[in-house]
Length: 228
Image 1 (cartoon, rainbow, N blue to C red):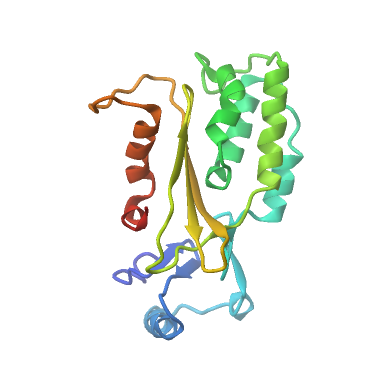
Image 2 (spheres, rainbow, N blue to C red):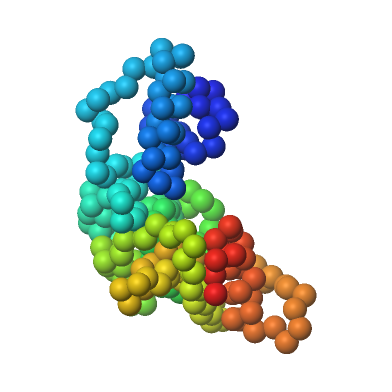
């Protein structure tokens, strides 16, 4: 599929799924014409049952005109995940929850008690986990935060993006809300950072908030130019 759509930079394909990003309804129709021409050239047949949907699932996310959110079946599966009994199972749980990390404010801070189980252990370590009250609370909060995860709004062209950063001795959190004309702020993305290794930055009078600003430039990529 990558070869079929080569050069069409408005397409994002994975296996037989193709996501098309356009800035207007007319441009969207024009993009589809180009895609259909390519499909015709390569003899690709479209499954009509998968067309004309108000909402689509793409790479483990549901996407509609309002934004992006985790599929309910994935949320249910993770929320029903039993308490891990080994370090390996803790890693597996964290991998599942972190797939939807950008929907979860303060994820790094919340996960600290669980991450401590991984310190110094190998990836497939089957060492039994001795649960502390803090770790149990963190495990349950991870699941409840995902259940209550908000929809992430699509970026709006020519609209400013507000960036709010917070930091502690353990973690850095960045939240990118999007202001709107109705007075509400819509969540664009959540970014956080947790590392077991010390990191140094050549900044004068460095503070945790300043380090968070550095990560913002990397985490928001091209959107940072709209941020304020």
